[in-house]
Image (cartoon, rainbow, N blue to C red):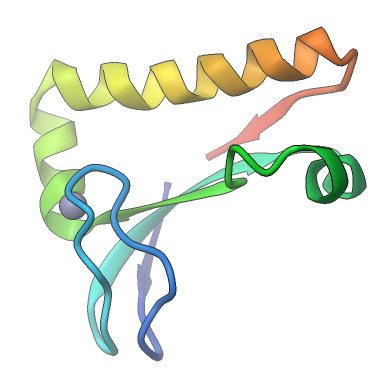
Length: 92
Ligand SMILES: [Zn+2]
């Protein structure tokens, strides 16, 4: 999980609360590394990066619920890539 500051308004919202990010907002990036080409052409259901706002990141650290939902997303992706015989690599 990488802590970042938005340099401009971001297109994507927080994974948990759907908060939008404007310039100067702190956000966290959870990155999932996959086969980029395959990802771009075949799978549009998932994004390879999840953005999480500072508030949810804080909450996530303090509750198990947040951890679980993030794990569930990673697991869903892992299973999907296993199904297609792809190498799945998770990078935090
Ligand atoms: Zn949030």
